Length: 444
Ligand code: NDP
Image (cartoon, rainbow, N blue to C red; front, side, top):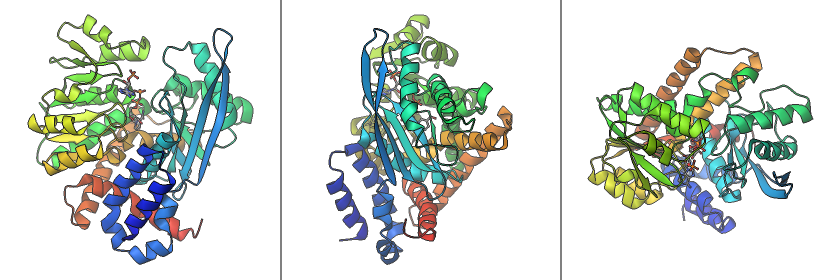
């Protein structure tokens, strides 16, 4: 049995109840085979893969808070500090009823390689809670965030672990958490990223993941002698990543015709109106039915279905496992040329393989959505030097980082004989730096 297979078997046995974590480990380790096989004896002696698949620390805690009726509610909080070989733990906080330890571990594991790919000194971590901010009053959200941070603040810090936003955690939640951290620890430091601009946030952080996704998609098309000009794009999601992906796609001359949320989706052949979408999702926090009510060219459909629409490019920007094998078949049948992931692990393994086998250029989330965490690291730099850079400065650094990521994943794939396989390229390029740092730091 090869070393990769041995470790996969052990990870499966130890984490049998965590399907998302297993899916992420399987995808990464399988694509690392060429890099592992080239150094098998050394890595095995170092137990490098066993160490990389085991979080350095997992924190799970009670989050009690009082709702508007005076009733005490209890949620579970998590922070998984996965790997600090190349820098302080860095990764978002997800607030969604589906959150459990396995989901946080999958996200933290992915984050190790993504953060390494940015070229910046940040380790991998992730956290969150099964709290659902949807339908809660601002006071209830504040009560939850303060209680969550009262416990979390013991384990994080500007040089230790720097959380950020993710699904359900936007500027409002980050603000409440930052206030509570400051109050308890008495420290005004860059302990969270995604902060508001008046208290240490970075310009362009809000836009960064969506913009970065389009910058790398643009690099992909340039490399193949094509452009985004005139392309039709299908996007899923209607949150932070989706909104700014749509905005940048339009700025680059493409037309986005779909978006979705957890209850339904929009098809707008005239192109999604970003300002209207922002008003509905960021200001009113309402459903997409309001989009169709306000724009006569748009159709609203219940359930899921964006991947049925004919497009040149598909950008899944909602959540994990939202692009399935039948969707992949439909995309191929419709002549889709590229799939680039804005969300984390939105495409299932069989769908990814089908797309790649059928000549669709595929860039996974680790590389394609790394613009968010990269800009978070730029926010950390600005906080450390107590300066704020202009939007243009941050945006231009982001463009440089995404171009570099594209080059690195493309080169790594070629180096190991997998030209054009950006999944293999991203995993290997991300892994190499972390592996070298772990070995250099001894058994820890
Ligand atoms: P938001 O909460 O802002 O938006 C998420 C969007 O996806 C919403 O439209 C939501 O709909 C939809 N959605 C969530 N869960 C489901 C589900 N189970 N089924 C269908 N739709 C769903 O999150 P973000 O935009 O920040 O994050 C989206 C993805 O991008 C996540 O995978 C996240 O991990 C990833 N990501 C985010 C980064 C960031 O900087 N924000 C950085 C890198 C990755 P509804 O409103 O109805 O819930």
